Amino acid sequence: MMPSPPLPGGAMFLPPQPQGGAAAACTSICCTCGVAMPPNAANTCAGCLRARVDITEGVPRHAAVVYCPACSSYLQPPRSWLRAAPESPELMQVLLRRVVRQIARLGAAIAAAELVFTEPHSKRLKLRLRIRREVLRCVTMEQTHVIEFTVHDRLCDACGRAQQADAADQWSAVVQVRQRASHRRTLLHLEQQLVRHGAADTAIRVDGSAGGIDLYFSSRSHAARLVEFVSSVAPARVGTAKQLVSHDTKSNSYGFKHTFSMELCPVCRDDLVFLPMEASRALGGLGPLVLCIKVTSSLALLDTNTMRVVVLGIKEYDRYKFEPLLTSRQLVEYVVLDVEHDPSGDVTVLGSPYMMSWAQVARLSDFGKNDTVFTVKTHLGYQLKPGDHALGYDLYSSNANNDDMEKYGQSHSLPDAVLVKKRYKKCADKPQEGSERHDSVDIEEIAMGIGCIDLNPSDEKELDELLEDLTL
Image (cartoon, rainbow, N blue to C red; front, side, top):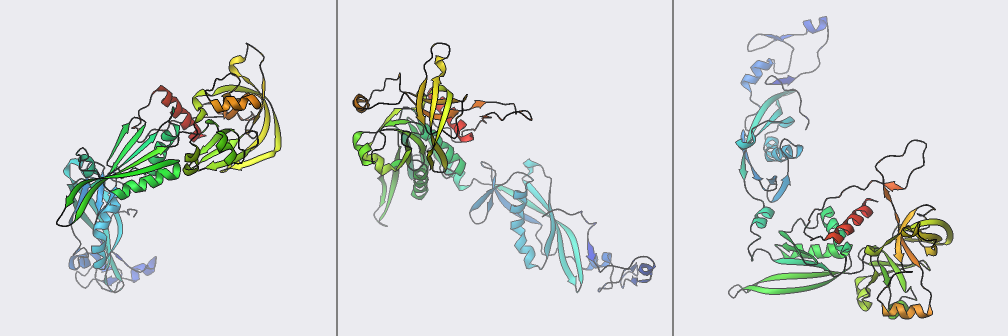
């Protein structure tokens, strides 16, 4: 409620009076003090009416609020907590909820409200209200009233559990998230999603461990909710276990500690996969050389040669359990020399459009050394144009340790390169008016919210590329 200019102590709402000479003629005498005044239904001036009637009678002058010093939140009975900064609208909302019902029972209303400054160490909050109430027929009064709130410190449930989380018997369920891969791009992306959606807010402790993170919860339902969220944003196989920790024979009650183990799929976005012969046949002759273009609750595999896309869930993946042939750490930068589009190979995958094209590319490291040029098929027809830079896998000179690929290469020809994505250059300056718009963006820093994953230099590079993709 927006504060209004304070009144000198009280006021009456009267019907509009005529202007000019008519105003001087339309006067009355107060029946109590005899002062000339505009006529009203009470036939009493404002001063005498305030002396006879106190509209703030029954309105509390003192109240109490419960404050959690650990997370700066206030208790809203019975059990909810609201985070509020000093002198903020949220804090005024908390204070008004403590008195608005009592004021409404008295037949009064709140015309305006404002917070009065108090010292933080005083443990006092003051709220100035303008109370409006009808005292006589067609006579309404307003009066200023100050309520002082005493602040009582108490930890909220979440902060109380967090302080006692070091004890072994405080948590009831734990979710262990792991990714067994040379790079943990999906795990880093999952951490960003947990922070963005607040899925781990109910955790009493989050610890980093080798290959993943451990999240501890006070109840099994909170852990199960996190497992459901992780399964919706990343392909993961889930295992459950429980351990008996207590048993009351009299009440026949049992106490268990539950463990949820989640192993993320080792195939990450932008990984190159060589499908086993069994998997390629089962998927209708897909590939066998495919590119993972999206990772959500399933894997989207694209055959850049035929523009076929197959989406695999974690159950379908477990039938074959193939590993990445090359990962994003082995990407090589190419320079696009020419692009020829083929509109017949137009496909849209999970909202992203792709078009088959033929591109002539050369490795950036070969410039000035040789004239080696490769002609490859690519799905990036909508993004690439001559002069652009692209990242891809160099199959011409790479030495992949894969027996199935070596057998396949004896009877089939493999592409010299597989382009994965366009390379954007960082540019802080905006293009001038009339000039062409450069294909570059400003990459903003995105802070890690949980930050429990131990990062080595290669993981930090993966994190930078991931944040760049999220910004793009």
